Amino acid sequence: MDDVDTITTSFLTQIAEAGDTAALEDLRVAALGRKGAVTGLMKTLGQAAPEDRKALGQRFNQAKDKVALALDSRRTELDQSEMLARLGGETIDVTLPARPRPDGRIHPVSQVVEEITAIFADMGFAVAEGPDIEDDFHNFTALNIPPEHPARQMHDTFYLDQEANDEKLVMRTHTSPVQIRHMQSNEPPHRIIAPGRTYRSDSDQTHTPMFHQIEGLAIDRDIHMGHLKGCLVDFARTIFGIEDLPFRFRPSHFPFTEPSAEMDIGCSRVNGELRIGGGDDWLEILGCGMVHPKVLKHAGVDPDVWQGFAFGLGIDRIAMLKYGIADLRSFFDGDVRWLRHYGFDPLDIPTLAAGLAR
Image (cartoon, rainbow, N blue to C red; front, top):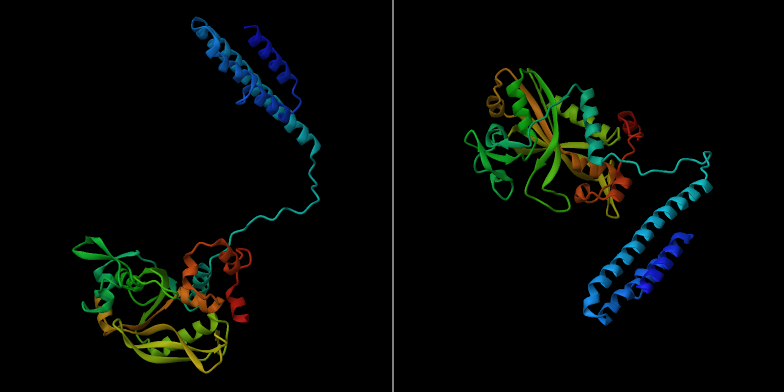
């Protein structure tokens, strides 16, 4: 019993006099460590008489608790005093420049959406939006896409288990349904663009299951292919910042337009690098055409009175071409290093005028 009191009193005195946390840690090990003095007391219980073990065990535990409590109390005091000493010795030089902080970046897709929207806004186009989940009618039937068309197959389209009004539901494969919904809800004439996410069952270097499209629609009494051509040529030359950008329109086929065409721009390939502008090669960038009369009828527009054009292009593809991005999948990786390289400073975003000057 005397040993217990002596050891406890000695450690309590040393703990109270500990000058720093390092010295306090040494005392903790010496008292409560695996080979510590207080821990060693517990090991002597086996040598005591059986009738004395209970009382000795309680006494040893009390000594251990006293030492542990003293250690915690002294550690709190030392931590506070060390912090006050550190704060008293530290100073702040207010003349130093501010420390740089990581700043956000505008994603190239978001930037290109803004640029395209600004270009068509100058031509009088408004922005229209629609749901990402569409029914079969708006996504296929209203756009004159027949039941046997490949786009309706499971390997190309994400179908949902639910139905609405006896119609299959799909993740929209294009933003063309927005055109149908807009014409159903508004009286002509129409002049809209419809940017948004679209979904197709495809994935490689130039395709992802989710990507971005923007489609345009212009409906009036006397719109013709000449208006379509002038609109898209101005757009292409503005978005790429090349005033004499070569172009051509090739006949094509889309169920929702007649006649239909694809627009190519001039380019060259030097040492495996694609360059937009002059050259002896061509690159397709979008599809377009005059809206099919059946599409107008499905949308509640009289094709004998109204006509117009439509076009569609991939926003991600335009971003890749304009900013030299090789792999479409990089857009969706979430790599902040990639975004710092290709992203845009929110306070220094290229404007439409700047795009024309480049």
